[in-house]
Image 1 (cartoon, rainbow, N blue to C red):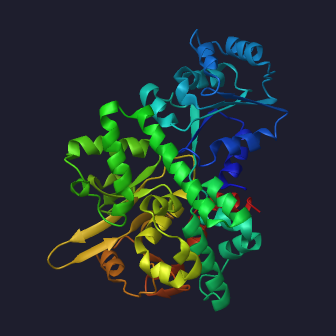
Image 2: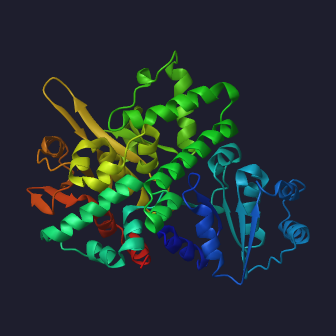
Image 3: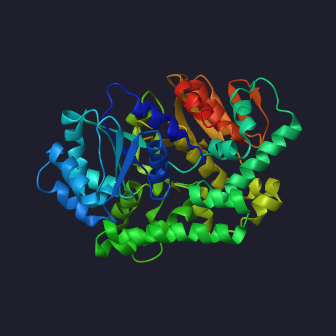
Length: 448
């Protein structure tokens, strides 16, 4: 399956000022697969996995002389690593922190060698050792997006959606067909292996087994980054995230005799692992959005809606048999779907944060699901799972934030505009983002 990140990896390969690269993201989002795919475009590709080859880490413990490191890797593994011709890939780098430190020296002393490092728990090692500023660059990966799924199943639909005239309603038959595709994606989610297996076999039982296996692998990781006494807190938060979709996260709802001071660090561990994303409150009064936040006020989503439903034990049959009903009944999941999409279409060179807004008073109760930045403006985004046309929260936000030129609604509805509120169907999120970021549009079109 082609991925958006493939475009940015090729951009990295051909840079004149290329640095060593950290490819960052949660376990099983496809990092290793994409690097191996990139490796096929080199004369040679050398992969060192520090989990399966623990002795390789010792090569970096003596010193960080890059010439010696390459010599010893050649001798120990029988590879010929040739600067300018070889892509050298260090996987599961959290097992060898000194290899991460060495990345800066590869850039400084051997810039012609192309080096990528990745790892399922890489960010924990980075927190410990840091990243040399200006010596190493990062790209962030997320699960497969809806538009990537569409590129794997209906290539012609991708450019059609990206270039569609938003001033015109979509023909109803095409509109419904795309909504059905969103329903299927919502049932399956974006984890690469389960999604590809679904495309190939359409086996719901196998899909459930694949999701369960990934959730189990995340649980098995708890002991790798949480202290023994913390594991029960991490497990409790892990189970609670899907149950609190669409609302401000409250530690008081976590079952057991736990306190916030015990649970908050556990949640932050899951965020660092990339398994959970916070959607943080912002007043939305100016650019950047993150400058006006309350770090104690946030919602949360799992990294993938397929895993969310598996953790909740939900039956996906409704998505496949009665999609119209599923959209109405699963509003919080659709809100999470939009958050997942917003992350997927962010430029990967910087870690993307998600924000929301709410107001609670005697006179006004309003909530905006997401605040995003487009064309240098803050844009409020409301998500409607059904066909509801109430836009009171958007209208209130726009009235109290005069610097915001318009609002966005994503829903089952067709394209439309009412005053300064633009409505897009749920399948058009990539279209909206790529209009503001042409490089992302090029990356999406490269899927074809």
